[in-house]
Length: 148
Image (cartoon, rainbow, N blue to C red; front, side, top):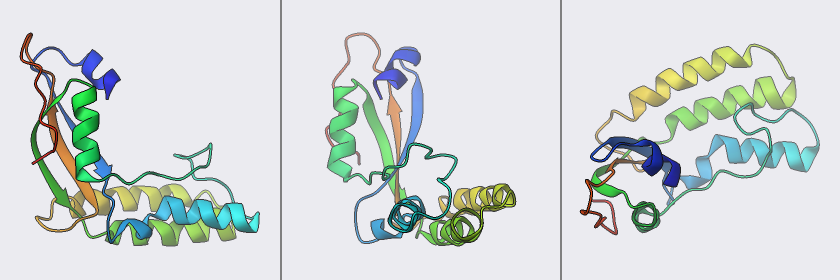
């Protein structure tokens, strides 16, 4: 977020999307895949997570605190998605990266991307938090502590 602050001009805005902590966090396809590969010793890491490790899920208040630390204002936020795209991604990752690595995984990733974009447009759900953040103009650097 500090880098986002640095590259935005004063008054510039950025859309930030993070996985939310909560009831649906267990459905994280990347975390499940990492667990499968590390415990079984089979499969290949996902291209977007070559170093392994787990993807973090954030509480709303944490995002607010991180925005404040980076001197960014939170204008709007909303939660969205049910995790359906995560289930689809997990199926593809299991078939084409864990059981039998295969170049067809790129097709799965593209299909996942389309489903993920569609799902985040739904007005309900609690898998992702999307925040419209803004770099303050000059002296107005009071960021809200919690996204609305």
